[in-house]
Length: 188
View (tube, helix red, strand yellow):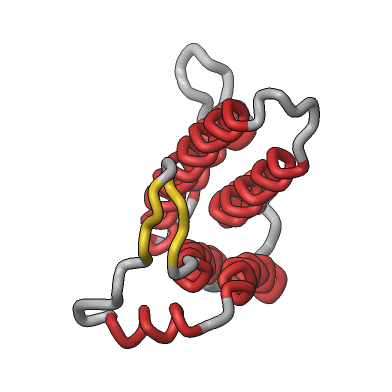
């Protein structure tokens, strides 16, 4: 490739310079990928990661307000780890593809599409785990709230998730995160 006028860098070298950490990985992976499924995941996963980060940050601020007198709270630390466990597997497919593209690591055909599919399945597992872990009644802002009854076309699936023990709710996203790691390991 010929250097571009005035820069002395090829477009490939310029891309390497613009890829700086998590925020630069998203546009870099989007441009570098050949898979439309993966490109769609870059957009959807990026929006989901941003929303999860904002939700957990706002909830953490509220938790700090509720536990203001405590010097150290195990609940705060646990809450931070739960947020990290939700966001990290969401951005992992994008970071893995950006890294393999930048380093020109050889990969099997379908690597990017497999990671995108695993990323989408992880996002679905977050929702399924949330539904499965929802208690029948809970207190929100001093008021007792009753879990909504299953309705609509997905009522049987929601009823099945409600019937599962609440501990299963945490294992569903854990399995989704393991699927992202497995997709990377099998396809590299």
